[in-house]
Image (cartoon, rainbow, N blue to C red; front, top):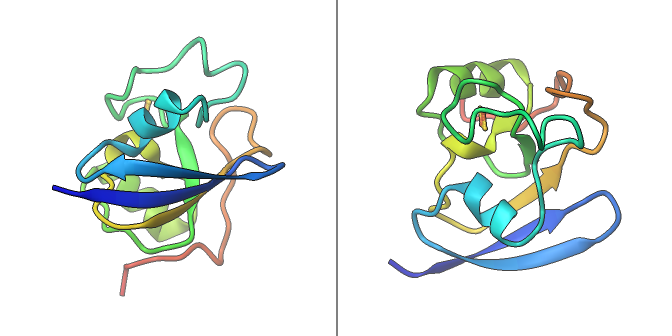
Length: 114
Ligand code: FES
C-alpha cells in the first residue's frame, strides 16, 4: 500500500497528485480532471480495456509494460497506454498535447527494453 507522487505536465502547467499504490494511471488522471484523451477520443474510447490506444501519455521514467500493445509502444517510442500502467512508484507524466488520436513516435522515449 502507500501513496506515490505523480507529477503531471498538461502542456501549460505542472500538477502534483498523490496516488494510491496500484492505481491505474488512466483512472488517477481522470479522477484529477487530467484527461489523457483528446477532445475527440474523450467521447470515443475503449474505457480502459487496452483496445483503442487513445489514452497514451509520455513517461519520464521507465515503467515495465505488461500489455502487448504497451510493450510495443514502449519499444518503438509511441505514447504509453495509461490504462495499462499501475502506479507503483513516483512518476512524471506528460500529457500528449500534440496528438489528434494516438500520438506519434519519438525515438528518445525512455525505455526498459534492453
Ligand atoms: S483507454 Fe483504450 S487503450 Fe487505454
